[in-house]
Length: 237
Image (tube, rainbow, N blue to C red; front, top):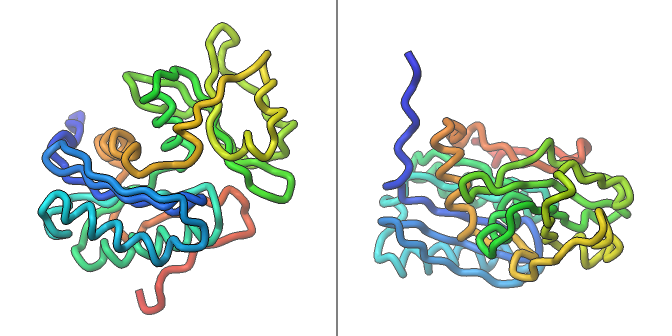
């Protein structure tokens, strides 16, 4: 028997992201989105929980009203990913909430799609002469990965999207390596999608939850792309 898709339209979703220079939190409650965002490098651990309290207060609810936590799973800053996963773990454990990891690249692509893009190249400066990057296309208005997310030298990026489409660029990778804008005859940049913003995680979380990709907190899975970094749970958990 084919399993029916899980109901997502009425979910109350808390979304968190600290994987880049930006720190953000958003809450979807009764289909309305409340959000907070700040460009706050090195302040994520101090800023995120107050943002969570703020969006819950804006909706006049508490964490007990949340059905699912969506967290920025990376790629991005190693420290930022750890902060996001640790805080997600603490919040989810307290309420026994399911969690779902959302790609930071997909979140940026979703922001570009919300601004009218249909094909997106998202790239984050990975330092050490590399970028984290992925190609996305809009499928029913939702950012959908083409092939896989990769960490590589900028010159190794090769578009697999069809050349007849206008490709929109987003992310800090294009600040670090402006020559990337010359790929495939020239890309247009979407300044509004430079960093991931938690409010754009909502539609991605709804889709992925409907696909059965949410898990309990013990299966929380950050993505670093570089194999040398591993995630460790909080002591005693």
